[in-house]
Amino acid sequence: MDKDNTTSANSDGQRPPQDQDAIPCDGCVQCCRNDQVILHPEAGDDLGFYLWEPIVSALYPGRTVPALKRNPATGDCVYLVETGCSIHARRPSVCRRFHCARTALALERLPRRVRKILLRRGDVFDDALLARGRDRLQRAREMGLEQVLDTDQQVAAFERIAEMPPPKPVPPRRR
Picture (cartoon, helix red, strand yellow):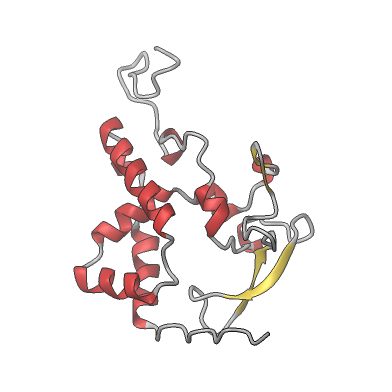
């Protein structure tokens, strides 16, 4: 088997199991720049390890949840450094599961009416991350890996968000 070709058949003719990690990010860190990373202790995230703060999220209406702190100067994740994620080996469960191609595919699988609601809200998608997701989804399709992108949970979350009232605009600060 060619070690560089993860889709080659093994000695018994079976293809090795694939997961979303087979779809390359090519060093992109757009998700570290825009997405709020919610921590999930029930999924193994150790709140004692991470720098976090309580936030209110559209994904968890009426609840305050722990999320990684953001760099106040840039809005980036506090663990994003010039070379990428400084805690990659211990990154939170959301980061391990996330792939922007899944977001793009989940959006495709939603009814047009729901997509329009989500896009109009303005607090669900980041344009740059969504563009990158579409690019990575195309790459996944070229590699024959679209099937590894399980979108059921993300589609359900998007449908829940579409049912929620839109966020109230934040008034500008007076100086």
